[in-house]
Length: 226
Image 1 (tube, rainbow, N blue to C red):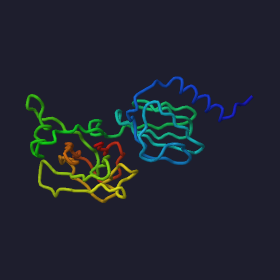
Image 2: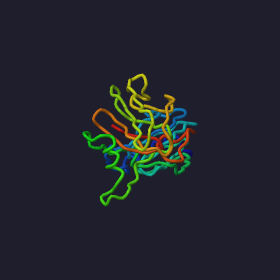
Image 3: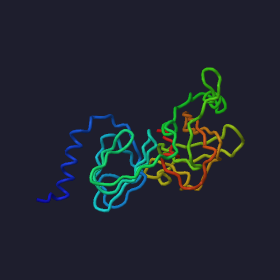
Image 4: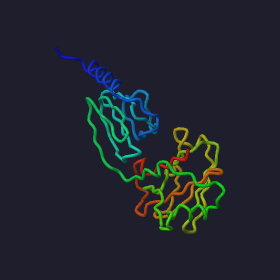
């Protein structure tokens, strides 16, 4: 007797629910693309470990993992989101490692009362005074996660460059919480070091010297400032 595909998917989902541990809801991946019928998931959503995603016929989803820099394109089937990659049943998955810096995906806030230059010097050296590598993005157009209603300021710290000041209004934000420099037609300089400033909060990062304006996986240019 042939078992209907819907019953097989239901059985796999049930097994996943039993097997999936109760994990903290820290985002594991960001959704880069959705094609076809995928219930409960949208472009640029975050997904946490343990999340189950059912893909309808001819549907596909692209996930980029924040910790492992794995980019997955998954077609049909059932997806169990993991910490560093997905488990896929009844579907196909193609994986590739993409340039990204896990430190850039969640920048450390610097002391709010420091000047831009002082903050830059602080993060550029370790306890012994040796140069320290700044969190790096791999595209010249950052994708910045921040709350609307504030003003985002980007300052160059290793050279002269016009300061970028952007009011984060709801109508300029993608998916309600991202400001996309690419969509806004703004870019930074390859190899440059910068401060992202939100009110009293400051975050230091740099742009990879090989960064270009070509399309870049979201995880490679993501700056999470919330």
